[in-house]
Image (tube, rainbow, N blue to C red; front, side):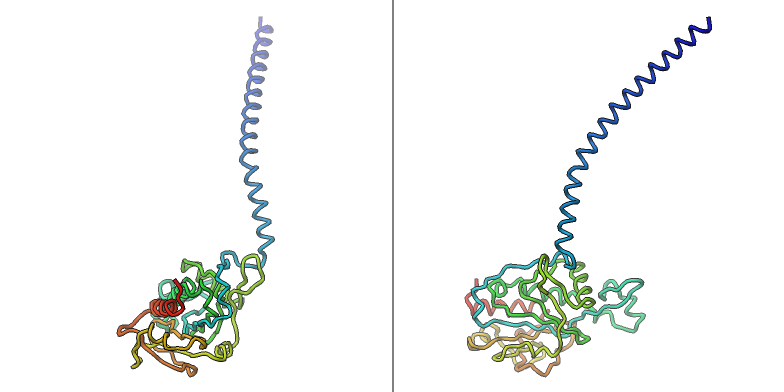
Length: 283
């Protein structure tokens, strides 16, 4: 009596195992089909990313070139110089960082430095104001030079697109001051590069150097001032990129004030570019 029951029990077990195996096979097939459908596009993306990575080796991603009007190449243009820019790199903790008053106030106080003097955002705003102007888009901007508080001089090409966010800008300045140049995406052209002093070596022969200061006794209307300058003269505007103080350089021909109130560097540049756009009929 025991024997047939044992046989029947085994048969039932085998049947249950078969059913379980069949269900597992069906589930595994469904899962493998899902994985295949998911993995195919991701593999294609990875291949594209690898190809892009190979194409852009040793190049900084996010520094594209902005197209400009090349019909104005033979015409006289404008050069901007940002003096006393607060761009200083220091080792904070285990990494090098671009110092600013918000993130490194305690670090600066420990090293007996005034946090109010460390304002790289002023340079960021000034560069955006210059490069976004219609004067640059029309091809009349010849060059932009920035000299730091420590005396490091670097050139910014007119067709570079400076990042909009400060965090990204800070990373670019850090890389520039460490590697001494930054190239364009997909090209070997140096969009930002550290150059030798003095800055006057890079000015055109027939150029007029104009400095700006609120403390200057010569208060002028910017539009009238640029209209009085001849068309054969290359204009060089020197603007301070520091939180407070006055630019002190020996190469400036004329110191002027364009407002009865203190202006930020970006606002001063906006007034200059607006006056130049009116002079050159740039809309």
